[in-house]
Amino acid sequence: MAIVDKIFNEIKLMVARFLLGKKYSEYEEKDLVYNTEEEVILITLKRLVFQGNVNEAEEILFDKAKTVNSENMQYIAIEFYTMLMEKTDEELESMNFSKQEVYQGIEDIRKVLNLE
Image 1 (cartoon, one colour):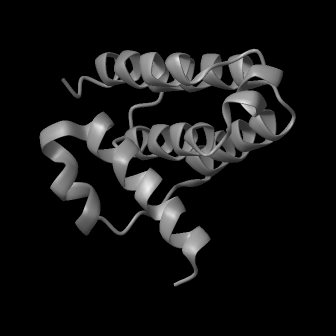
Image 2 (cartoon, rainbow, N blue to C red):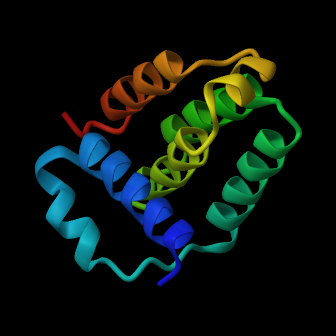
């Protein structure tokens, strides 16, 4: 495994641990399969982050977390916040976002998804 892949996986596991808390061990064993709606949500979030529209992407994540009744929303949140954690402070700042907002977003989405 390349060093970049290893770092990415470590970041993803850190976000998963923080988001899922005690349910984290279930995440490691999970073989994720998204339905079409979930795939569209994930693609939309990734596109918006790529375009620098992190605030809009986060709003969509929270809206979908409230309206889409799926266990996979927690995994979509992990993917989203992992993307943001990979960004440097400068990259996030250029998107009008910060690491502190990432941490706060993880805390807030935990509440919305009832993961506390």
